[in-house]
Image 1 (cartoon, rainbow, N blue to C red):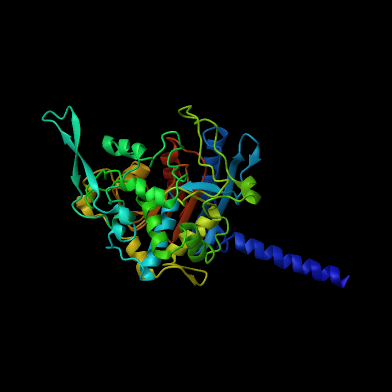
Image 2: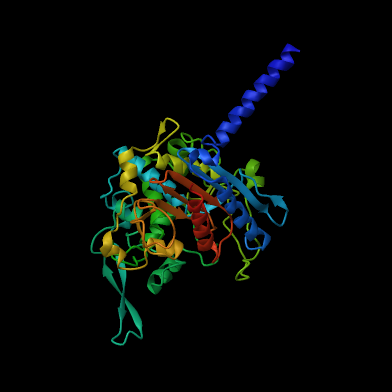
Length: 436
């Protein structure tokens, strides 16, 4: 009998440890951290309605305030075709929400003294030296556009990679025809691959092929969303002597207990991976997302990550805590302050599409070192506070951190398509209306 009792007690401790591992923060009743529980329930109702209308397969939302989880709910399906319900521990392809992870990795190396923000990227990636730029040349009537190749006025720096001013581009987004053609010709981009999936080349191939293509902008002049953070991942690898995945594992994931985050999903966890609809409910276009069932040839710092809502909340709360979570420090508070400051200035913001317009269809945001940053309380067409920072992913994931209101929020879903911005704005509005 004593042995049975001891075994039962032991099992309780094991299960308790597993629960603590899975949830990065303690929970609190919403009213304890300044939320109205009745108003928070609007979130569940709104997203469940989208599921019921067939617009969304499923979603997980987690919201923390003042260091405690006030809301953690799942709606819909992890896999609609199989009828598998969504659960809080579901794993998602986070696409561009990998960028903040890679950016933190780079800033850790800045703190280690192995990287400086002003370093030219060729210091770590020699092929990325003596780059050319594809400059548009409209005719007198602006009816016809041609391009000229000119030398880069200066080398892109690590800071340029972090803030997307390196002059690099995304094949899927840029309108610079010679850049797109060069990406295909050099083998840097495969037009038959899934969007934003360039994981099928070695790190060396990635850099060498990219270096043969011209830049789309002169470095430091224009904010253009790009493969810059994938290149940043190669800088992290060169400076650390480790793969990006291994570096993140040892310096970020393990310290923060993000045990379901990485660049692929092991076979033992594949049943927990969320799946999208077969076709987009708005456009009818077929949906295909990257294959994360096996390790990639390169760890894509721009789009290759996987994570859970709880894991990404731990990362977000670490940033909200000035680089620290549960007694573990990942970054200094000064570094977090630097990352969440305006690194564009008005001149660069005026030169093209702004981060908020790309992400939310709204002005009011600049860019820091890895995130969009809100400049003021007004102007943006969504609620929030000056100084909040955020980013999102191609397949529908989204997060933001509001230091003023002490909020960290994460939305996880696998729904690429035109509705992504709507769901980001919907969640943001519903969270702030619930503040009591």
